[in-house]
Length: 256
Image (cartoon, rainbow, N blue to C red; front, side, top):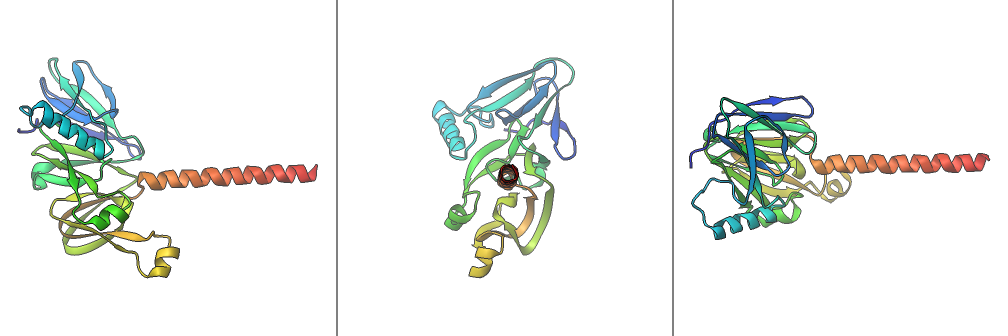
């Protein structure tokens, strides 16, 4: 199925959202709960499939829903269609601060592999499927698991990166990255996991036990602040605040 042609604007700085402009009968699909606002004429419907295979039977749709459940996503994908006249807009925002990355799948070889929480929205006709990393080490030690998402088609799709986005073009070299910081990469790039140095470095280096290794030819997208790091920092700040409060309270009691 050929993807719908959509226009878009990415707005904001540290916390971005994407506004999609639709012509009559054009549709954009999105993760459940990603919609920020929609204007007159836009209607939405939650469906089991992404709509890329309209002739797929019920069993096929149920299988796709089960695969999405395995990746940790909602079994439903929301379809937003412009049923009015003229042009109208619908906007989508990611669930945490970061950068929205527009992908022209036609210029990226037709598909990209992304972490399971990276997909935000795409033109109707885009296929969202489960991708299994063939190297078990990436599953056991990769931090983000070996179950990824594959986004394929010939239209525009949008993914989300936490913090600042870094894009690298690999030309046969190898890139080593914190395991949680890999947002996505072009299909054909080799993704594996290796130890983060010797035992002392692994235990006391502060970089974790393993690093993600990407090699080959193509684009790689990296995020500076994955959600697990953000949660970790907030948790640490909360614990420090509790310790400071306890210390102040103890000091006050001793003084009294």
